[in-house]
Image (cartoon, rainbow, N blue to C red; front, top):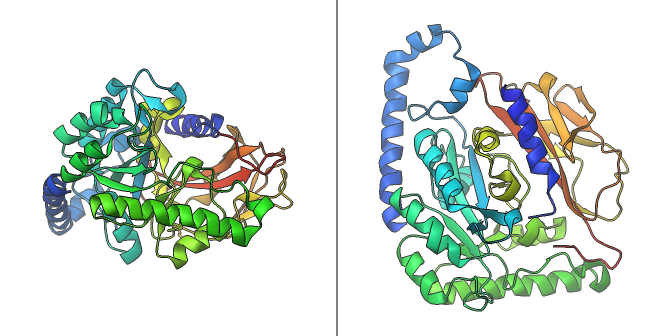
Length: 400
């Protein structure tokens, strides 16, 4: 049954890939202390009994709350939402009722943590609560305040909104700066989504890499400064609009001390690329809680090397297979599955190296290969890794 959910999750995640603390910290800190206490208590007093317990039903393990254990390396799922409304574009929206069901599930089965805690844990290789989840929104829509904020505030869930400063207070669906300041004072974190939600890779081929990079980086820095001027905060977090980036942009982020966030899927952990952290879309076609549960329980695939260095493609066919080097005996590579456009693709395993090929033409815009493999020690949980591809049209631009 769980394998079917994995397959359906993959299908959902591929079909529409071109669509797109102050008060809050108190409860989080209490949860951390309780989790740590119970984890130590379990190890000292119940380890022999646990080791003798027969394996539970896999589906029950996916559902089970794990407040009593800590994992040895940081691992988290980052959720991505846009609109929380029943009257906005379906492709990027989730109804308030469905959003509430997501949050109720998280309250029972996961620990919601600030995005900053996830980033810090990965950077410093410190622990996070078992099944940690961070909540993010892109674009700064007013319905986040109207429909999501009351639910999140009631549950004391921290969350981050990536905004375009030049759009705030301009569009009829956007938050105003007064609302942003009020939410910030209420513990909501705001971060950079560029000034105006541009396609960051547009014009790269026409302008040349150096001129293009100077242009888009000026946009990023201007957006960061405007957020700092309004809110007196500069996290240097950048969520790529449409999830689009290339190696030159990622290298610039690293050189300037920024953390980047994409829209390809997967959990995050110690081996994650800090300039392109994956997030699970959880609205539109991805709002189905049955398949989202599998993603929330996923583990970050410990990929230490990939032969696919640049997600920005200069042609629509891969010239060679892509190989991933995976550094963990806990990844059951004998049962790995990779999917492209919702369909399984051929894989090959040699030692700890996973190789896959995409034989069909890549679509203009955004696509990805998702690979999963079960954990040997955590029944019902799957390692997850996404390889994104970005293809421009004939004019060198990227579609919405």
